[in-house]
Amino acid sequence: MSISTELIQNDNWFSLLYESNASAIKIKEKYDFIYSSIGIVLVSKEVVKFGKDGLVLNKLFVENCDMSQKTYDDLLTLGNTLKEEFNKKPIGYVYDSKNILFAKMTYKISLEDFYVDYPKLGNAYFKINNVESANNQAFSLEKIEANNFSKSLLKEIVLQYPDRTVAFLNLADVDWKLNTKEDAKKNYKTYISLMKSQNKDLSKIPQRVYDRIK
Image 1: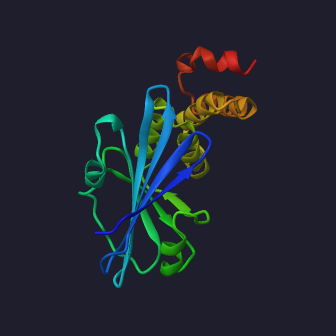
Image 2: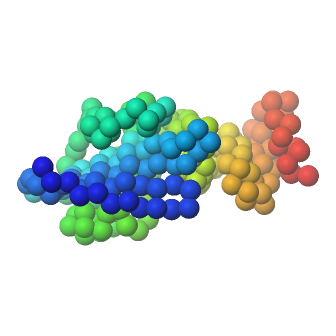
């Protein structure tokens, strides 16, 4: 089997893209990594399959994946139990690190163009259907220092669930770590406002929130 490999580099993260066109079903696999204080960490895996029956797109977030002990064959097994559903439109499914489906991605592009252009695509319509899992995944991403990935997910959460109090706290914390402190202050204040309007226990507001909005 012939496999081509491409390295996609960004400021603080990189991706490895593998492509196989040796069969009737064409396959692309993308692995996203970050540079963290504990070394290189795998954040997520995406699999695209394209054939006569349509297109499959699954995205799986990964947790506690020690890359020093992994081979390519090990990477192949990640997410291999996820449901694969061929669609006639470019629709993708997003799973957390516990293999729980929490979001759906939809693209306005033909199947052929999607596969050819992948992963250099425009923005998808990202619909969260399990906000608890989405929020937990965003928090897990923050813990492994994948702050840009966490922020992207948290921005979708607060957009679709504007009353999700804890998401504003998580987003503010991530903004603070990314040194976008004005955004952090804004989100901390929204968090405090929601805590008050929802009659939550204000004693549970972390002291760092008050310290950082000064």
